[in-house]
Length: 73
View (spheres, one colour):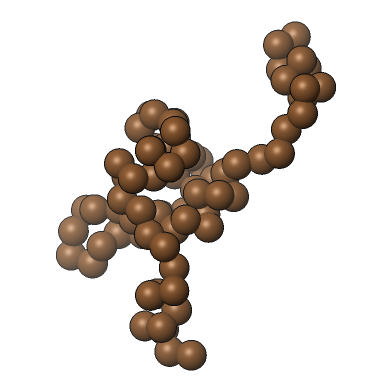
């Protein structure tokens, strides 16, 4: 498989699309990129960032009510 084929198999989001997909604010999204939890890629020759759908989904974690209750204390 060539590199070009790998890139076309991925689903990519721009910042606005990623915010809508995750239902989070711009601040939350940029914080995840800044602290390394969310990898991002620049469009060559620009400052535009792109994010892979798989990487966005890795930010989501399965929780339960016990976790929620512990966060409030």
